[in-house]
Image (cartoon, rainbow, N blue to C red; front, side, top):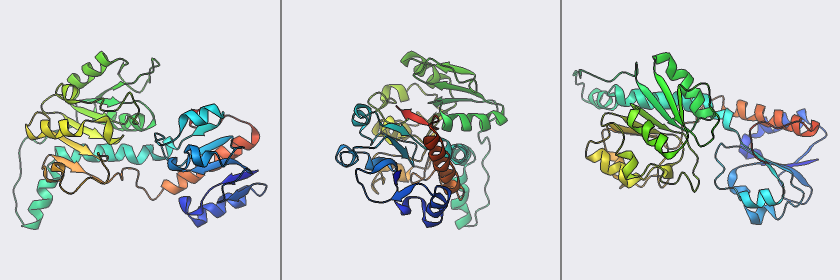
Length: 305
């Protein structure tokens, strides 16, 4: 069995771990008709590249998102696609809470005051306690964050297209009317959605305007889920209290974007998954799925059959 993987995607030491674990597998960085499985980033799974892999049966992504993947081709060729959603849940959950606390507790202001040795406090800083946190999406990222936010005695609600309920959440909404209800009720709105034709600019000017004036918007999903120009307009007018953004449109965010200079915005450069344990978790997932594939068992994190 030949598995396509580039060493630099997981690092030499982790690559060697896989080689030791699976002596009957040939790991290769050459795209060819011999390849049966591929461990890749989404950009590899385009039609031109996939045409070189006529015997590909399974593709394991090293990311959560898969919007760059040629989904139609994968379906046509019956190629199973799995992603790495659980790998990043812990760190992204902590990142969501970090962004809320940075904006709630005036961290940017205090950092600036440290530069001038200014001793000045500000009354009435916001608490997470007792608030309602609305999640767009209820997958592994949202679930991990919701569990942690419950420790603040919050009410956690979600919007998801599936009619199934995630028991972690106190309320679940499925249609656009429900989404609007969530926006109106939430003190914090957290976006964890991927970008699809249905989620592009899901939060347009009209829907963003439904948020509470003192609410925060946190985005760790994809930048294009939000109409960024509309968000800037509402932030400038004080109609949304602030925004914590790990993703923007485009990326990198241009230096002349108004978002950079806004005191009520906290930006990180699509770095929410950052962790010293990320590659350990990623390699463990890949290893487990290779075991499962060889044994003919159901794979973890299947997003497309």
